[in-house]
Image 1 (tube, helix red, strand yellow):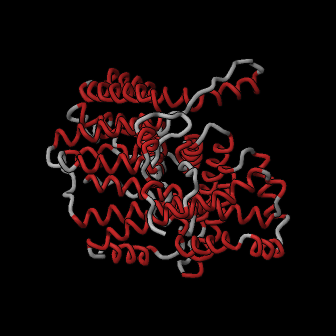
Image 2: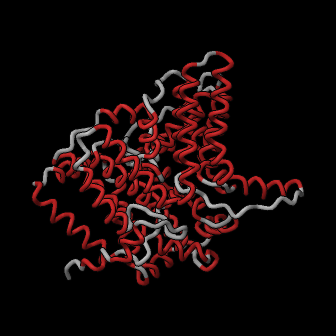
Image 3: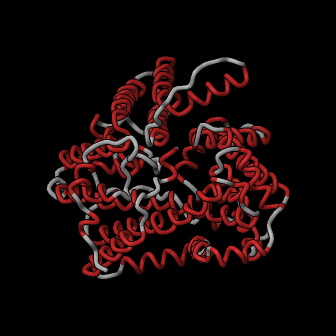
Length: 492
């Protein structure tokens, strides 16, 4: 069966492409986005060699993209950008107490939107429960991407305060940095020091860069639409009624969600990096084979790298890092991971998730202090298995709708699992088992092997790329759901 153009493009989809809907925020896997982005790319060719107009053109599209994602909240985002720009200039000029005052005001203002929209109901609910107050919660819409661009704003202000970077040369440069649409709504969290220099000196767009970008986008779409969204169907079934499934089914659900969240988020990152490359800008990698980590410390060097580095540089090190004694080092680790957990969501489940990872990191540091592990293939395999299963169990608190459901799922895994469960599951849902095996082959393959495959793919002759794109598009049309699942990290 060939590609049916009417399945991709229609007048209603074209209209939908230019209107905002609270129920249907825009994201990269929407065909309406691909349609509008195609038009954007065609016109981009007229501006690519004109620095000022290229910048204005991308800013305009980025603001439109954010409007499509969060509607009228674009106004709040614009206010944050303007305040950051002004505060950074004042911080750079000021000295002493005045400089600290500007920093305090800037951080309070930048974080106020996040605190209000994401956490106000959480604090109200807990106040009502703990102190018997009767405050009413509001029906608040969480602007998409607010956690990411707030952290980006804070890093810029702090870097200027520390004199690690000068303020942006002009307002349009800072607006470009903050609004750049590939990373705007779900990261990676981009540092000004890495991105601002690229505005004046983007990469030369040639066939090699295009092939790399198309490869990344295609890989990202496959990760999201073929793997993550398919695994999500089974995970959703189990989590809807967790008391109706055996321990073996919960264990398979744990594996499925572990792979779902990885392929979903790394897929988004691949698409974001690919789109940025297509425009001549390079975003830093956000994942580095994290499930191949042999311990929890290594895992956090490889998972959501932009967040891990942000937490290290703006929470852990400013608290004192390992400079204020051993006890404080462990305490600072716990605080840092609690902040990381709370950043993910206004719910005690995320705080508990952060605490679990903080304790694991502290335990690993303590273990390394007294035990000098011998590096061997066997010890690395054992460490990888233990780390993967610890991370997987912690993911249950991410996906479960409550603590009760999370502990029910974990309890079932440890007390109600038998080989019979897996035999029955194979006969009823063999496709899930096959997909999980494929996931294992992908995530546990050595990085050198995956890099080699990627490099060989890039050496494919340019004229064959049109067939690769058409083939990938055909697969997406044939196998995608009617309703594509939003990226998981959109909710954060």
